[in-house]
Image (cartoon, rainbow, N blue to C red):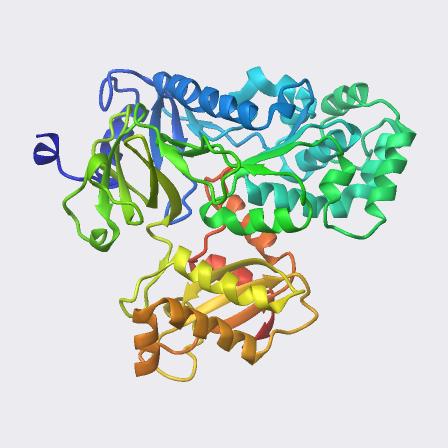
Length: 506
């Protein structure tokens, strides 16, 4: 009856009501007043603003965090201790609506985790630093000072990976700071913050020398375990677009330390729980008391009002667009996630997150999904050993002036590999195209007919995707805690960041 009486909806249906709520009007979408207007990351399009109630936050803790924490301790009992956690997260830029309610990300941040700050290695004063480079330096400083660190944590595995990259830039200065028991005097932070940090830092020449000895070995493989011998776990999202950074962490910096991705969540609320910490790829039990779920078979996801399935009607092995009804007044809402049903736990579907609906390539109606392209790319680059793929994204040819050798459209692929001094070859480019053809009959058909030109590969400098991250954060409402690498770029401004860093084209 519900499905018959209410259409499927998009964010555009709610925007006028949210504007009313932000002006102070009550009981518009929900009887409960929102405690925050959450800004989405905008990975697959523009950022949106969504209301979140106190009840949603409470349910997130009771039905999400408490459940996965139980799973964590059951699977990794060595974490039931008083060791500190090095958490990489940053205080976002907050603003206020006309009615005085905060507007900003509802992902984990120091602002909404004040009751937990004492479990982290960074002193509370460190979370008052608003600029990310200085805040990251302080996170690394106090994390490295604590040899007994038990866990590394961040919302996304990409944040941990970039933090290790930064460690290689800062370690010598940090070792000096630990030896002196004083924060680097050149660090651009408020003097009151510096005073508190210095009070929390004890001179430790022995620990400083241990860090120098580890860092001077040169090998990145397993360096996390050598710096922190008692580190037992990494808590971070490792599915979808975060599979690649997690893979790099497992193979290099954090070899020997398991990664657990505990929750599947969005600005709309809690979606799923990972109660199988050792399973890879990560899979999630749908949070049925948090949301009402419907499923659109992926082949019908381009339709405006397709028929939906309920949880007892989905099939194992099939992919679906998720539709949710949540506690903040969003009804039959299409928020854009594509998932695959991989199992059932009793009667409840267990899913893997695949990609965002907007993150696919489509120059001739072929609709190459993010997950399909990623599988083809990683299969190809695994044969390039010892070279490693660090990051990538794609752009449809319509967005770039270079039209190639004919009128037919094609994909631009921007690759960052671990050694930009050695150019990739034409053979390597052709390997990617052939692998994609082998996995997609539709793409292969268009290629054989000449309707799509071969992929054009742009090799970029090491560090380019970090520059893209900073550009995106500086030019959007997203915070550093929310940023996800867009695997399909949609704006010319973002593409220009990559183009200016190209070192080789094929």
